[in-house]
View 1 (cartoon, rainbow, N blue to C red):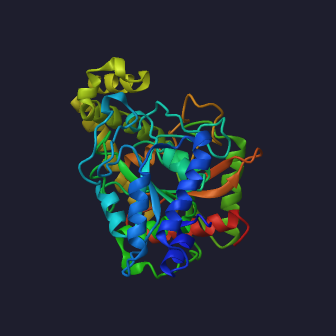
View 2: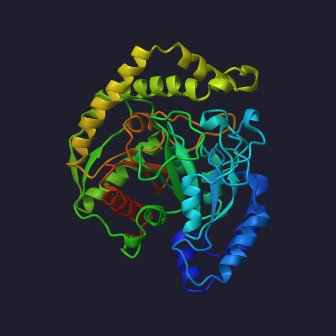
Length: 425
């Protein structure tokens, strides 16, 4: 069965596939892949099948009617535990759905279960493996959601990002991912937060067109009939990221080829001098995250023996940050956001690497989030575009940063880039 969101939604809407068959197929895929990939914390098998059977006889169909989806285990699903990858939250059952889960149910979608997250959406990894190569990390913290989509179990999964928690797994697993703008229109009500200034919800699907479908269904279903169109003559600011971290040769090549293809199709390149600023933004991001996390997880911080060393270190650091240093970091963010929004009214996107390279080998760490930190501090939407690969066949995601009020242009550009990468443009 086709596993793209767009194709499944169309097949269900036409009556070709009943929701019960779609959910049963998802569960069969899960049973087949889960022993190797380990993307799921809990599968709500009985309730998912019951919900699908009820939808089989429903005449009025929502735009995501019968579509199974995964939910990162920092996000509440009514009747299921939200354990955040930590023994400190074990067995805490959610009384209500998070806002986005409730909204997806209204649209006809069915939560299949909870996907693995790193501990409190920080660094300590769970058991999930990369579907592209099991000995490599899937990234984090939205590791289970990215792997569940990449392995074809579900066409849609919810994740989140505070540093690089969705962009990096999308890149490593070879799927499309959207980090929504901080502050709306998608909201984090019902999420276990780490940093109220930085936390953003996210969507993972197989393609950019599928991300757009999910986003429009959640925010503007009246526009679902509009086809995704290529963006003519886009203006791009190219960002290498090399001022923050070593970028692999394969990733640099992937970005260069992507930009060259865009220029060949009529894109215009715009001078971009922000590499002098991004290290300062990454530093301010770290200050804000540590300060706010130490307060959001204050009760958990009193049990260091039940925390991983990285999380305990973060909370300890956050407690040592003064109010003045925190306010200074927020001031840096406010200044830079104003400046970048001015730039993004003149260009359609900043384009660069989504991660330093392909997914590293090993499961004891989740890779570096540094290439997302500057943009997450500024609350900007980030779209990860799949389709490029390194010499070993591992995925390399391209990151597009856009204006929070111009997501249509971000989706259109991502669609063009993705199709060019697959040779279908």
